[in-house]
Length: 130
Image (cartoon, rainbow, N blue to C red):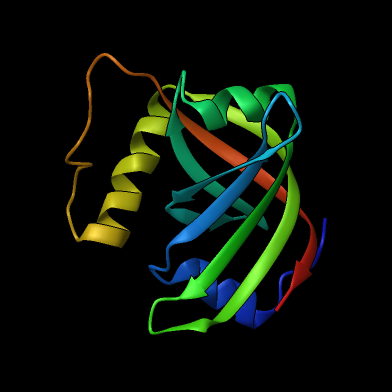
């Protein structure tokens, strides 16, 4: 696991939007915005079952995450890594609410769909720049 500098940790812990790149079946990149958190050295985020990124990461765990400071987009960090775990259930549901608190100031994720399954994704950093 790559060591995260204080600068990287501060970018992850602040409510900065991150962009996740994963790999499509044909090898082309797929990018989507995600809310992120830091947990025991892993970068974590949340998605829903059936989304393109979820299917891509189950097939190919290689990802890259770019995080720009919300006040200065040129101050950014890039993390390449691999998905090491995808967690469903209460832990994933709790995380999306924690992320809503961090990013929106709301106690619960306001766009929750009771028919979807939330997934908490853990990414092991392999290389870090910035």
